[in-house]
Image (cartoon, rainbow, N blue to C red; front, side, top):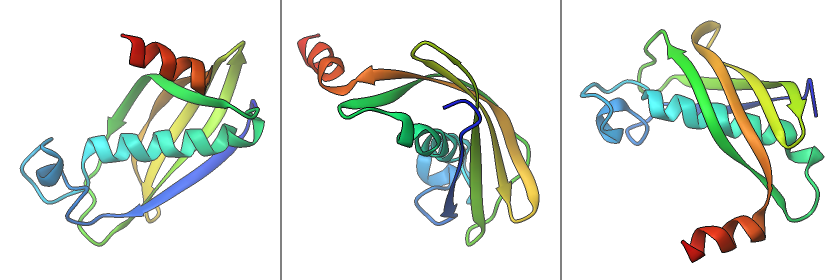
Length: 124
């Protein structure tokens, strides 16, 4: 799975602005929405390597959101797996609005058995 890369895209609309998500009061692409897009890209980057019944969960993310994107803009996030250590997979993540970089950072996911994971969650 190391070096696997995937990109996820979205259009900034009224549902993923800082105002709508409660992370600010402006009608621009929200930081939580950018993070979710980065996680979506990371999931896609490793999907081909997961066995039946497996999934992955995000456990850490450290990003900077460096530029605003207006409603109507197309935003993309790319995740590249940089290290695999057992069930832990580390990623470099970067987001763009058109040709301009708007965010960058790192993300960690763990591969889990989905049914066992949900059993533990529901038993808590």
